[in-house]
Image (cartoon, rainbow, N blue to C red; front, side, top):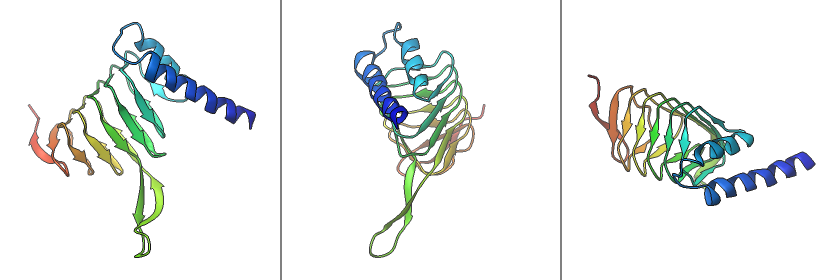
Length: 171
């Protein structure tokens, strides 16, 4: 019980530091923010730069050499796995909690958690949203404002609401 209270308190302190005191692009703060976030259970790879602020109620793993823009939001108790060499623009949201369709009495039925995977080399545009159990394939791009609710094949540019493949990026 005491350990759980301590962790809750420490988590609040870490979020305060990352989101209020050290938020921004000051190069002296990037390693410190990553170290602080590791202490509350997140995996943060080498040379990954997190601007902050950020919100995460689930589990988060970020690979090496990533750029995580301002206002990253991860809602739900699911998992988000971000590969290596990923660029995430400002205001990107991952929704990892959802519900089965319920009865006429209440359409939001039983809740469940999902896992969202972003494979290596992707670029997620500003204000894009990712929903459901999905994988964003390697070297893909989600346009700004896209709402991605299906798997994205590797080397694809997707955009729109709901997101659709705009073109193949294979060279």
